[in-house]
Length: 309
Image (cartoon, rainbow, N blue to C red):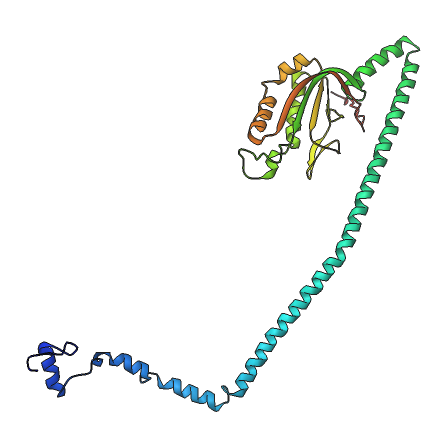
C-alpha cells in the first residue's frame, strides 16, 4: 500500500538515498562485512595455508604424528610407573627398618637404665665411705685438745662448703610447670612459655642466699657456691644430674627471717610475674624439719699467697 513503510527496512532520507544508489533495498548486514569476511576465511594470512601445506607434504600431520603422540604418551606412562615402583620400594624399606629402629631404641633405653642404676650404686657406696671416713677422723681428733679444736674448725668449713649434711628448720619454695590445659595469658603462642627454666630456679636460689640461707638444696641435691644449674634439652640439671618437676628449693635457716628477706624482694617479684603471666606454679611454705645431704663430687681447691703480695 502506498504510504506504508516496512519497519524492518531503512527509513527516511537514508533509505531513499540507499535505494537510489543500489537500485533497490540494501542488505541488512552490509555494515558487518568485516566480520563476515573474517568468518569466511578471506582475511587469513596466506602464510597459514602455505605452512599447513608444507607440514602435510613432510608427513608431519599423518600417521607418523599420531605414532609420535602414542610414543610420547607411553613415555609419560613409563615414567609414572617407575616413580610408583620407587615409592613402593621406599615404603617397604621404611616398614622393614621400623622394627630394627624400635629394637635399637629399646636396647638404648635399657642401657641407660642400667648405667643409671650403676651410678646410683656407686653414689651410695661413696656416701658409706664418707661416713666411715668421718667417724675415723672424729675418733682421731678427739684424742687431744688441738684435735678437738681442729675438728670444730673443720666442721664449720665443711658446713660452709656443703661437704657435710645439714639439718634444721627452713623455708621451701616450690616451682612447677603450668598445667597443659591452661594457656599462657601473654608472651606468644609458644607452648614452652609455661615451663620452668633453669634461670627461674637460679633466681630462687640467689634470692634465698640473699635472704640469709645457711644451706640450700634442690630436689635433694645440695647446692654449693660452684654448683651449675643449667638446661640440657628439656631437662634441668643440677651438678649434671637431671631433675623433674615440681622443683623444691629448700633453704636452711630461720623461717621467719628467710620469709621476711625473700618476700617482696626482686626474686619474689619475678616469680610472681611468671605465675600471673604464664600460670607457673609458685608457692612458699615453712618447714620445721629440713635435711640436706652433703654435696656430691665436691672438689677441693686451695689458694696460696703469692710472694711479694
